[in-house]
Image (tube, rainbow, N blue to C red; front, side):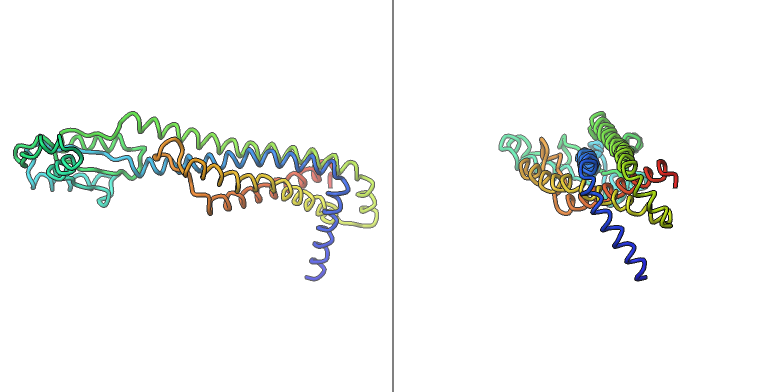
Length: 302
C-alpha cells in the first residue's frame, strides 16, 4: 500500500514538473481545453435550460373541454369517468370548472361584464362548463384531445393546437443539437490534446529510452503522461468554471430569472452552476487523461 502511494505521489510530482518544464506545449493544451470547455459550458447551460423550458410547457399546457350547455350533473360525472381512464391522463390532473364560477371570475374582472352577466342563471347562461386536463406526455396531446372530443356531451376541445407542437419540436431540436455539439467538442478536444501531447512525448524520447534502459515497466512510463493529461484538464477547466459560475449568475440576475417573458424561466444558479462546473471539471480531466493515454499508446507503441 505504501509502495503504491509513493509511486502515485512521485508520478504526480513528475507530472507537475513536466507541465512547467514544457510550458509552451502545456499552454497550448490548456488553451485548447479552455476554449473547448467554454463552448461546452454554453452548450450544457443552453441544453439544460431548454429542457427546463420544455418541462414548464408540459406542466402548463392544458386541454380545455367545453361541455354542452344543457349537460346534466350525471352526464358531467360520466364525462369525468371517461376522461380519467385515458392513457395519457392522471385523475389528479383533471379539474371541473363550473360555468357559474367562470361567470363570477369574469364579473369580478370587469364592471361591464358584471352588468351584462349579473342576471345569468345556470339555466340561461351561454357560458359552458369545462374540464381542464393536463396530460402526462405532451407529445401525445393531440391524440388525447381527439379522444376527449369523441366523448358524448363534449362540445369543443382546445389546447392551443399547432403552437404547442411547434414549441415542443423546436425545444427538442435545440436540446438534441446541443447534446450532439457537446459530444463532438469533447471528441475533438481529446484528439487535439493527444496530438499536442504527442509532440511533448517525442521531445522527451531520450528520457523515455533511459527509463526503459533502467528497467521501467510500461505502466511506469505511461503514468506520468496520464497524470500530466489529468493536470492539463484541471488547469484548462478553471476559466470555464469561473465563467459558468459568475457569468450565469450575472445573466440570471440581469434578466430577473426569465428570458423575454415570464413563461420562459431560467434555472436558478444554485446548485445548477456548481453541478455544471463539476461536470466541466470531470470532462476536462477525462479528456486530458484520454488524450494522453491515446498519445502514449499510439506513438510510443508500449
